Image (cartoon, rainbow over all chains, first blue to last red; front, top):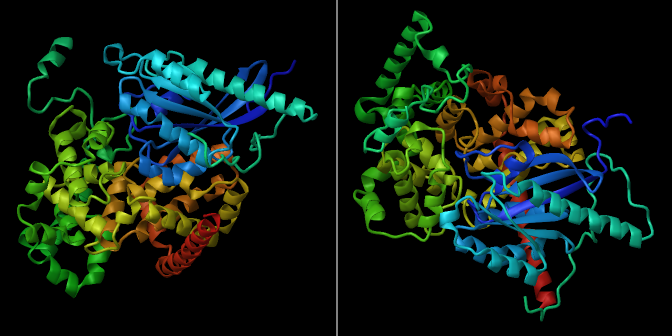
Length: 214
Length: 361
């Protein structure tokens, strides 16, 4: 079989990286896309962007990842990037409890601005700082279960679980996409031209009933 | 080597083991000569003499401690503008920046205020500021040492500002402004220059870049998008075909006035003009960058385009090439029209949002 040129892939998935400032979003991205970690990294202003193509469940998937500034005031710019995203990696810092406490606010952000069917993965980053850990794995795990999120702990510095985190969310998105095309009776698109993103669900996020307890 | 590093824990300046350029940034790669060092070291006698003559001219224009400056500006504004566009001599930059921004007057009118803000007041933003201190110019020797004088000054200036104006507080990006200023002046001087910029002592106030909703960022991005369409129509069309919008590449141009990721010698030259002529230079430089790379950019698809817009080639960022190109764009009048257009639109959308809310309630 002839080798695929670099630009060819079966699916293009847009994913956003969100979470409080300083939790390591940019380094998770650089670890995943370039296998780099920068100790002297600058705070992100606005949005950054990177891609990587990889095999997931036998398919070639191109992940198009938007990394966003974490400070609350930047949401005025960054929330526009949630639209059309199929996945969100919601990152907190296992050594900083406030960044975990703020996860619920980020979920609300996603509900307000992202597509309703977006796949969300909760990521506890910086597990290399063992002596500073302040958020227990079990607490985050049970929170994730309650909210219906996948969950993993990572260390961008030691490259622990970073690959797995991205693999998992991309696989989950893929399963939803293929199930969706099965149920709608259409064959799953086997090849998508560059620049086209597949969107799950309608363009409008589903309205929540006003009495919802969330 | 290991032993020496241990000794460095004593207070005082650390001898930097890494090579730095003439502005104090750690060199990424010993082979690159983009730092201006090679060029500016008495490369030739002629250059050195010319530079000395330039400094003498500037000193005369400024007077002792800035005493003649205002008089000179009134008498020969065009000469001042022209000379600033050619670049302020580095040894006088800190002083001249304070003179043209109006910050010197603010300092003189407010004795003791800065100290009060730093020492006695507390700020809700302290933790946010601390978190970003080591992430501001991390490759500059002055800011590298943990809790060193550079980091302490940066913290003080940002904290003082966050108290001085609690509506703005601290927003990521402000550290790059303060950091740049601190390389050329004292803490207190840097603080008042920051005040002059955000409150608009001479030029239009910048604070809207950092207020809730980042209203001025949104306005500038709108204006930039229109200007690109008008001045570089082919590229503007390519951007809309590829779904590129300016928030993907230009937010930091405005929020940090090119100090976030552009080569330092270029950033300084832009700041010279920025302090004297205002934000219009940011638009002009942006257009110049796009124009310089135009023929490459129009060929690139989405992803490569984004990459290119965040990584301009070295030759595009040579101040002596880029700035003359920037000056050739005439945009002031159009910017004002676009501002009015934007405000009208905003007014409309606010109105329609409000009426929708009324209906929903």
